[in-house]
Length: 252
Length: 254
Image 1: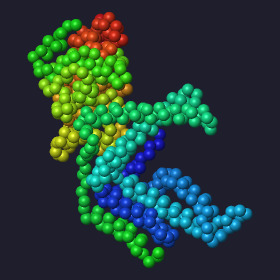
Image 2 (image 1 turned 135 degrees about the horizontal axis):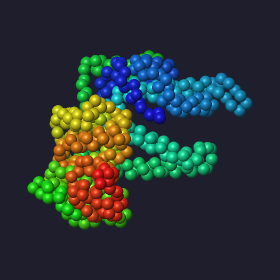
Image 3 (image 1 turned 180 degrees about the vertical axis):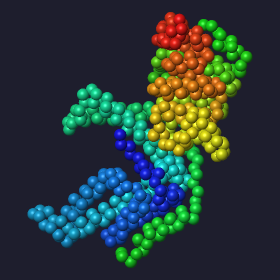
Image 4 (image 1 turned 90 degrees about the horizontal axis):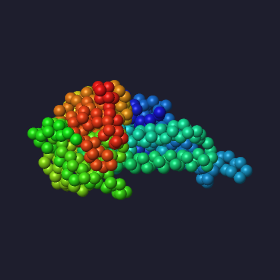
């Protein structure tokens, strides 16, 4: 079964892998912010190139990245369909009642470059360290503990959740259920999902019992081995400088 | 029933004392009724009974997860809000499903969870984790992700999550359920090696026979028999009247 492991390539070696998780999270978050705020297509293209370079440096295979971005890409495709037809401007093509505008294509491209760029940066940022280190880095950065716990438990139990879902579908198939595009399928699938919610709710009580019996009082405490060195700051300087330069460049 | 087990441990310290314990679930089900039980230091006690007998509910009372009517004393301390944290650090409870027991992303974080909450300093936490993993022969798994472990490995790590807290009492709920024979045998050998007080609930009567000197038989929320493990488990009419069977090894001895 395919597991949604964002940290599958955390074991590789690259300048991004060896970067301190805390500094990496902050620096790349700055770059993401910079990318999504880029005002024109030229700067967005430059930013996007930078993102591609960073992803390349991270050594995470592009096939892995593209596989995980397929839904984002599909969503962005929607903009390419709608915007050229709806944004007023210089007409490129005119077909009976439809007109395709240059401004529409430009705006759709700008949105696409910003969105794909920001989504791509998730991989050099989070995909280059084990997910537990991401959690610990968030804790060290004083992200609210409740939020950190939610992220951690989601990641821990998504695999259990998917396995339970798979077993339920196997059990349904064993009793002659076949997926189709009909009301019966919809009814069965919604029942299975409902059951999954009930099972998950019951599991939360058992997990809480297990946590309470080991002294949990609402706060998640962990140990880490983070150590900052000069290289971490150098990398941070380079990435943040690029994020700033993109906005100060005379290409606006 | 014979009091052999209790007589043998008569001179030992009473480490758990349960008196007149009653618990009713919110839906009205009487899960425990007038439970009296004493566990002595260093002994291994089995809790047996059919499904729904109240074994797991009783275990949850021993470190304060559930609090019913009646009296529960652990290590001479009454189980109340004041003593709760101390008692929980001394009573290690291993749940049946390792997916519930192992809630952290990595083995290290899970095994360190208890010691950190106990307020131990970092070096001692790290030492406890290494020691506990060594006790269950899983030292090499320290950096592994929990969801990558096999079921047998998860069971052993579950045990380590408790051992790292250095409890005085080890409570195990169905420790061998769903394990293959090899993993089951390995777990039994591990448990036999621990000298601390153990309470084991389950249907694996061969396991109980292997590691427990005394058993308490529960049915419909009541303790219906206590005594020497071999004596209780070989009592065919008693076992069958409460939905259990004499274990194969005792049958074949006859």
